[in-house]
Image (cartoon, rainbow, N blue to C red; front, side):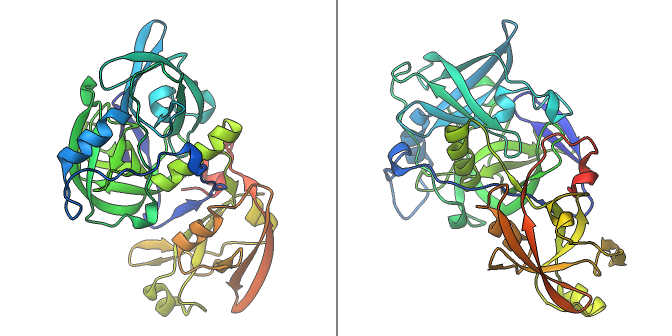
Length: 393
């Protein structure tokens, strides 16, 4: 069981899962903000061949803000954020501006009624919550243009460019100290992390870093050597509920998707396949004579979900090296025209799909390759039957 310290309020949120390799595969439609509304990259002054934390800080700290939420006249939460355009749009963590870190059901989440954004020179202005996404922990705020002095937008990078070992910098408001810098490396990529408010679906593809992250860093930028935002700081994985633990950031491509949809619709919709799957390993192939050496083995299917309605199914379980496996389940090898070499390929293929869209899924069952047409649904936010009924976790 993981304890996730919510960085805005320091609340330990319990969550669990079966196999570390099992993920809920429920991705939403993707869209990229237009070039006219997103910051154009400005090279960080300093050595182009090295990592200059001082140059990154000087260039990017002015576009990093503090976010303070009030309820009943008192401070309820605080964190960080970063500016993404010249319209006063600010990205922060959803758990900084909502009660999602304090409740155990997504249906009970409320936005804090009063929000402020504070710039690097301690000027403060009211902010409006445009929308938020509990599944990715991303929220979008808007500050009236001109309400705060000098809010330069931070350029957004791209997730595929990030590699383990890349040097990174984080800027935020740890323990109420605005504009604080920490530095480290990307420790791992593609990590599944638990969303707040007992949401059943993991936030996929998170960046793990050893840069110092503490209460108040939530919502702040994780920056690469060129000063590009590659992630939004979201949480730490702490065994004892303290701030000492492994830090994570939501990858920038997920931030981009949430930003685009919230700008357009005020919310984020996720297409839903309704399955959880395990990767195919060489040990599985050899032990159970699987018909393909690559793909995604279904481990659970949501009752009456899109995959179940299309006829996909799981088989009885077995045990391999102490882990529960499902070698007799349907083995997906192609989806929406894209080959599936593993779980990540399945996720990538679904990334840009929309709820209601029909896609073809090719899979192996009983030694025969079959094709099903699946009409994708919309991911449920607060299921009555719990996570297991959704095929999640």
